[in-house]
Picture 1 (cartoon, each protein chain N blue to C red):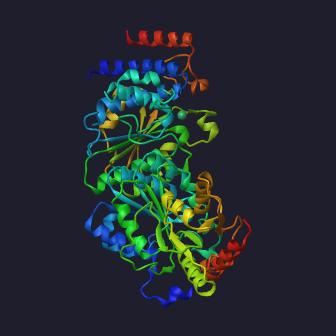
Picture 2: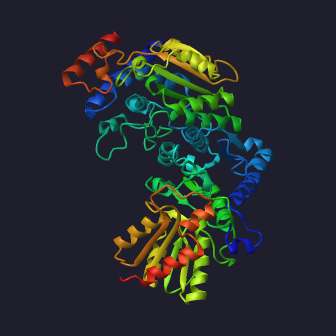
Picture 3: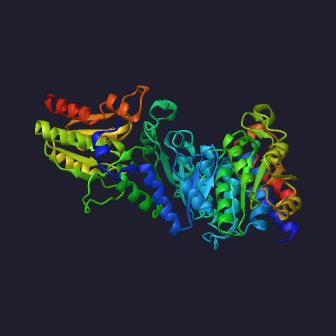
Length: 272
Length: 324
Ligand SMILES: [Mg+2]
């Protein structure tokens, strides 16, 4: 896939995220837009995951700890062929499998998440199993910056370093906002790099919207042999839609028809 | 002080020891058997296991939420994972991980609650697990088991290892004699075991309380000519409602016994089934009342609340005398 094609994917994914959130009249708009470039690079450049190999014990694992940004995951899985995209018209509808958090009822989803602070411990166990079985698969987990105060993350961070899980990569979608306000006001976790480093992790910062930089970061894994890696992706909540960027109200704000049209126009112009 | 029957029979071991011996036996044949511990390999009697199979034990340290989350990840990757931790911590601190990472995500972890109920006696309420049946019964896709004796424990661990079902198994550390030596009296999850048959009343007990129920039944027969059925209802969920219905058809009075709060455990599970199905029996739930328990050893606490040969016999006589 060329650089341009990859960039177009991100743009399409953003349009679809908005489309299905508007259709469902629910969703986590800002966070889905902040993490979509990361998911794009992971699923189109990094993970050896496809509908065909999804039951293979050797596939890479992607576990989304920040489960509320499920719209980003669903549009990418649909694009990868795990299910027909039109299924997402039932998002959050009565009896739909496509609910507001990842569920294994949807093909392509590894774990049921949604409660925060769960993705990292499960990922540690999965990465540990790979080491035990001398398998080459890798485990990636995406955390929100707002979920970092959950103590279970730090319990798991200790275990990952203790067992030298260099087949594990945590990505932090550091959009610096959470539902109440700036993460630095709610519960400051900075300097987050130093915290992970002191827990025994190898740390890398990246612009979470620079596709080439993301690719390069993932290509350099493990950041250090014998250590788990954390990629701190600096992102913008609501990225790509000017009136949503860095606006708290878009945490789970749903666009009106008019706002939706404006957003799609902006995205269409960005392609050219 | 243990009960006379326990002391008179030889060869009785703690269910905990049978668990660790069985797990070791399984691990020998299957390298996917993994024990995960939270600084609990000593209390889980897994020190020899760890020495013999160092690659099949994962030490987490004292972090039960992480213990269960990591266990879920291991199980998702095909490991036959036993997460071993004191029942009190495992089922309270890590309840959300049990609910989401094990049950909801359907990762086939076997959660092993050691030193359950009031096994830690005088250590107090922080170390008691009298809430676990209630909390876990309300979680979908989780089988809840309290084996009574060494036979049930060995069978439960072997069958659990071969099963893809998320499960919680809990037991204590007191030596437990065999309830029956009848080789035809087999063990299967979800099927209560009839230990004794009697026409006058039934004890439906679970875990380490089946033994005192059996002793009480013997006393009732010897001293009062009252014949009691004794059921080991080792599986709390799914409850063997077929057997429960049969008992309700055959006897006038039912006493449930458990090492658990009287709220939300075996007793209330039986009561709700019976009432919903039109059985208006003389009925008594014996367990730990809604209070911080009296101080003492497990046996002293059992005796205090009537979970003993004499206590249960008295409860039975009073129940049979009661006006309907
Ligand atoms: Mg955030």
